[in-house]
Amino acid sequence: METSGAVAAAPRREVTVSSFIDEDISESIRDVLTKAVQRVHGLQAVSVSSCFGLPIVRAVAADAPVETVTIAETVFAPCFFVAFETASKLPIGEMRSLLVDFKEVTLLHATLAPLSLCLVAHKRTDAEALQTVAAELVAALGPMKAAAEMLTSRRDDE
Image (cartoon, rainbow, N blue to C red):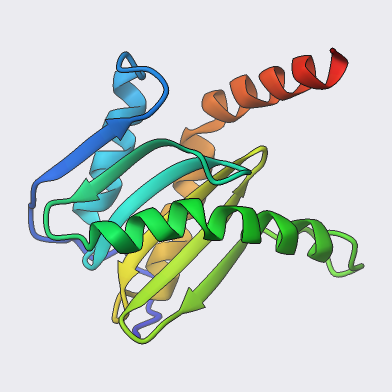
């Protein structure tokens, strides 16, 4: 796995963006997710889920293993939140992401609480490039995070 830090341009490939909450999801969010998958060599999918693992929106390359993407966003999102809550109690600073390497795939979950951002990549994808793109996506998805925080606080007030 390379760690040069430069985001390598990926060859153009077809990316499908699916919204699970509203077909009218912001065009800018669709654009941001699609461009992330297209520009990082080996990045197969970007998914935004609730902290409970409910998919909200995802961008998936045509050649991505859909089952892996589904598992990453539904099973690992809640696990990431448990790890995030536990790690945040340690006096070592704020946890921003969690990188997990498997035999054939690398998952990166990034803090977007109360949402979860998950990147699914081929095992040889540059880890530093994934970290860079995740940070860019967290910044770009700020309005979506703010909306989710507002909904969460309303629910907590009831």
